[in-house]
Length: 288
Image 1 (cartoon, rainbow, N blue to C red):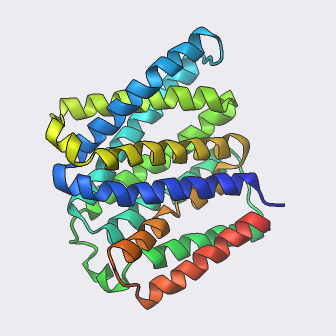
Image 2: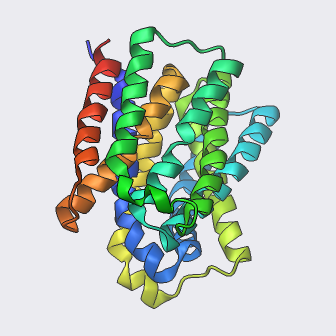
């Protein structure tokens, strides 16, 4: 029987992977702050009335200590979002995306230590295959010699740490609350509020013409990122963080595949081999 946690991780992987491809163009054209601003303003407009309704009708509830904990981890996420977008703005997608996605290593490490999660040997091998596969798939080894001087790498590394700690924190709070709806409602509002506020403070206000130019990109990104987050949140609430996070972090494979199909980018030998390793890792995680 297929593990529903693995399915949730795969859906999150697809949502974030496609989203990274879709957002690359507007980020390079108008900058990360403006994209960050409009996406999270849309989230606030859509979700705020719903969250107020759910709260007033006692469908969601949260204690003060859990709210503070989520807020603290959300600040790290907002910084991770900004530096990830910044890396996409000035760096090569095929290089900076896999670096940022390596945050799963930090998440797994923290989950095993603090959440006392364990992995079977077989599933551990699946995770290793999957991570190695994504590195091979998303990276042109011919560019590795430039990694110290490549543009955007420093921002990708910074986002790696912020996202790794945030994803662990999200799993930690999920175990404490054990209510998917509450977690989604609170994190969406806090993330959107903090992100939009950060963009405003950094003078990242978008113009009407820029909104018109990329309106379909923004519509698609709203759907893709929220779909991915919902899937991920379901997974980490009912299954191990150290299982769901590695799968969802395989998103660069999706981004690379789209680049090959629509941008006519060519796959080199190590990327083809990486795709095979990724699929093998997912198979092990899903059926072992």
